[in-house]
Length: 304
Image (cartoon, rainbow, N blue to C red; front, top):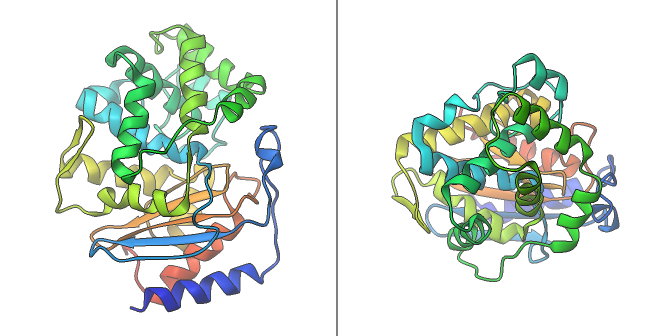
């Protein structure tokens, strides 16, 4: 397929469509982002790259970082990890406290907020310096040493992070958080604040698509079976309570973030990243969802 022609056509068609949704203004620092930014980048397992739009501009990847977090925790603990967090779709908002109480402090999956809190707790216990280890892992995946946390975004999330604090405190009451609540919160806000470009994201997720290549980056080692499980979790849980819709319309494993980014992978073919800050009520980028649905429709190629 002619990737360049396809993504150019998709970019132009989506860019010309109605700009529905709004930026995630409940995080003060994200409210300042230009809502009209838009980018699409693809990296193939054959080493080809295609990109259009604001692909070199860094943005807060937010919950996309949970896939990196999951990879590190799964590498560190293996099957033991699933004793503390489940693998089922939530069917509820990503920050639901009702579901967490009903299930006695065990998050439904690793890609909702409570699940990521448990992963942060795991790494705080397992690693001497989880902040530096996390950055090192993402830098190695993307091949870029310039990737950093955005301290302003992390601070902004902390100021407005009451729901996250309530989730962690509830899990602490059930014995599913080992470290101090404030320490888990601070690490979580930092991993969500990490900034990357669409090009960097597409490259960073390519190892999840390259199933025939060894996965060994910055002391994070995953087997092919473990990568398949992470991809399965992305397919069923990567878009909160819109995950079924994404699987239905797009048909690729992926992960979204309220900063407007979306990453998806086609096993053994490519990884694709989009960025458009306007998100819908479920927390997913409106233009990103449209672009990826068009990609698998025009190529007639999804995992199904």
